Image 1 (spheres, rainbow, N blue to C red):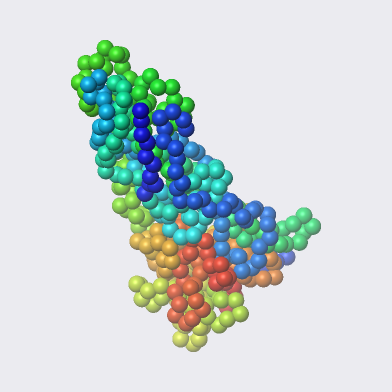
Image 2: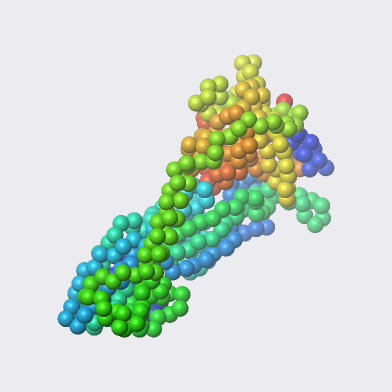
Length: 419
């Protein structure tokens, strides 16, 4: 009677000193992109100083709900049964995304979505893709007359995540240890499962909270007399049209947000900077962070010398601390700017770090994770993007960049050296 087809969708110094002291007509789901393994890093597990510049996702909440991406109400008369091809209309377009990037950038996002799939036992999309944003045709075999809803749908998976970072933790006996702890970075994600096509009638008994039930809710199931007034062919659905209007409005709003692509331009703000001055060094090496002289350049690894002109000197400003994690702006003595990820590339993996006029802007705020007291090793994470700071290779002139999960080889661990 029916046929189904499946397809894949598309003064830190002071702080450091202190610290030192479905069934029926539904299609059978096919395999989507395989889910990654479950959470391997757990809160409370030990880590090392090389992990200070890395992070892993921890899933805080999940919600699975049926979603209809394409729909059309269709009345089949006694003389019009058989195979028909119906053009369905877009109901909702679902895009896979993690965090503020509006897409899936870097290993952290893939790991987060893989963890979601593993925890739910679902095969979810773990790479950037989107359901079709254009009308599509569905071919169906109609053996009985009736009022049908032709649909394509999926299970939409949404929720929130947190960030597990390596940071020092004081134990019950007063000693200190490095452990994976949940940091202040949080965000939301969206993904979906395999797409399915189907047909459902008003009189069909379908499971609650199923994709078929969602399609049936869109079907304008009026009285038999009202339905009989419609000739064979498409039947307008008030619910479907209302839902479509709502989704179009949401899509328009989302498009407007994405068009800006970044937070509003920052404004100059007064900074409360600690008096201590530091270099941000590569541990045991002579190269350290040096701010750019030119506005279109980035922060690079350089060796300090007479000609450094304080471009390698940093102060921590507007410092706060919450649950052992420091948050601060990094002010450069040499050019008077604050370290920041440029707004126009903030959504990109390996975007470079630079300086800009200091302002009230989360792109200029950094979380600082510390080694046990007695060590000045740190890891730095941008508050807005959630990415960790690091460098691709140890070389003079190498740019400091953001990496969503950090650098696995320890090149995201630095040392604060008092000047």
